Amino acid sequence: MRNTTAEWQKLDREHHLHPFTDPKALNSKGTRVITHGEGVYIYDSEGNKILDGMAGLWCVNVGYGRSELIEAVHEQMKELPYYNSFFQTSHPPQIELATLLAEVTPDGFNHFFFAGSGSEANDTIVRLARHYWAVKGQPGKRTFISRLNAYHGSTLVGTSLGGMKYMHNMGGEGGSLLPGFEHIGQPYWYAEGGGMSPEEFGLQRARELEDKILELGAENVAAFIGEPIQGAGGVIVPPDSYWPEIQRICRKYDILLVADEVICGFGRTGNWFGSETFDIKPDLMTMAKGMSSGYIPISAVGIHDRVAEVLIEGGDINHGYTYSGHPAACAAALASIRYTQEHDLVHQVREETGPYFQAALHHLAETHPIVGEARGRGLMGALQLVKDKESRTIFSGEEDAGTVCRDYCFRNNLIMRAVDQSMIASPPLVITKSEIDELIEKARLCLDLTAKDFGLM
Ligand code: PXG
Image (cartoon, rainbow, N blue to C red; front, side, top):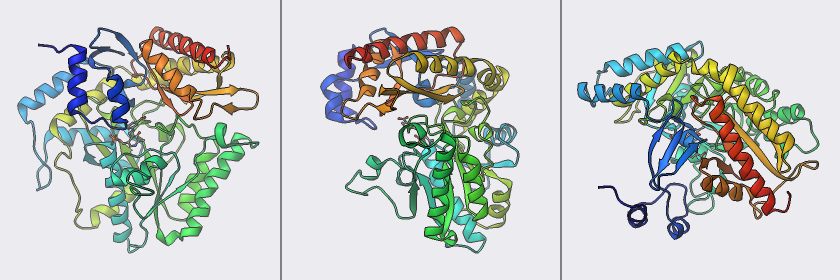
């Protein structure tokens, strides 16, 4: 028997603590209960059909209800629902998945370590990178440098790598920030670039890395980590000058370069990996989310040959998870990647739907009074909400046009996220042009309603 919405909400209130949520505020209004999904749409317990402009949480790349993934997981469950890879054993799905990842990742990535989430993968990267330097006789190289407003997960290491101050301060000032993690400014030109050109600003922010390395001493720095495009931070697309300069600095000071591809990976930016879109040559890559289209949790660390050679010669790797390379999760990832290949989704995003989506976002920026900028690549995009386009004046946190607009989207059966004063979209990679039209039409309506609330229309 299905519960009514009110019954679900009551049970949810009584027994479930939600991630990244103020429990009291949520309980006072009740949660929306999502019951099923098909293609790019999800449905709630009231029967509303909702366009999922966020692909779940940036992950349902192949869309909902794909029988190819469901069958693959079902078959694997019957065959072998679980086995570990700790004690000189392996199993076909994880061997096949590692082999397929070597095929779709950039040249030089031939080894993969499996974990259960993006956070776990980033914990793994910190441990492997420190081990790498210890094996090379430089155990002092332990510190990770990241960016403010980066997101790298929610474990203690993920939180510390990330640059979200409110996460660092959970449990009191700095209460969730581990030692050995440093942050530099982010390449968010629209909000922080002042009078500089985007290119000048990109170089300036990249050079903060050099300053930080010199301050800490290169002999103490293990790695720099960054998302090719910051996702949870607001789809921050760095100026073209940024990544080449970051890469030059990492090489100059012998610092590992880590690309967190949890959101950008598996086609989101129009290439298999965001690193390819920005011509970054990382030493390590974090992969999760779109890897299995979120059907079953799984993540991986991609290890470039130049790092793998050292790790393979370096003795015991004292690290791993019960669910590293879980067979059913590997089956979901294999099926998701094969679906992406067979339906040519990456090419479609690069050549067709991505440019179409970006053009529609830019048209909104040109024509809508409260959209100051559109940014993005492929099928990830953001609309910057502003009070005044001429002076690049963003709404204040108190005015919070982002939340106002997000709530209008919610009421109009469109899922878009508000990150501060930007509206974010990252739809499934299977979205069609007519579904993009629907997304944009709904977004425009919600922007109009928001603008009217602020007397700007
Ligand atoms: N790296 C990046 C770049 C991410 O976006 C993680 C690591 C952590 O992955 P797990 O699987 O441990 O969650 C992420 C996750 C948001 C939001 O509000 C984004 C994420 C997670 C939760 C919320 O946009 N990204």
